[in-house]
Image 1 (cartoon, rainbow, N blue to C red):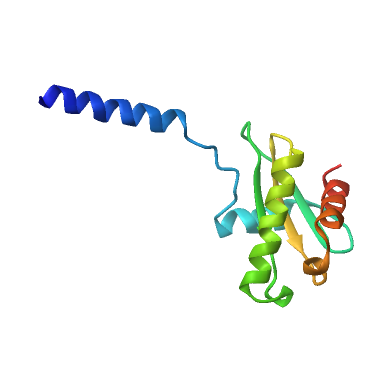
Image 2 (image 1 turned 90 degrees about the horizontal axis):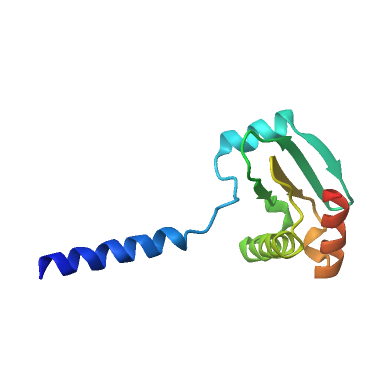
Length: 123
């Protein structure tokens, strides 16, 4: 009986490992600071992109939305839109780290206008 329970636990663990999703988010303040200091900057009217080469085979991306943009629900909506555009359009390239910085007025952009500005930044 005990052996069967161990097999079930091992099977669950192996399933979890195969379904593991790769996380492409920058989270630590020191990583943001490094990219702000060393990164190359590209700007549009409402967005700024900082780019730094990475040592690894994946990209990392961070999104920074200033409190001047609005309340938390407005800032979170803007971040969700940016993440979705980046995910659907496959904008980032491997071997780079990115930070997308938003400016005032970005919350008023439609989804398509935001998509066009992001494409301009990444190309």
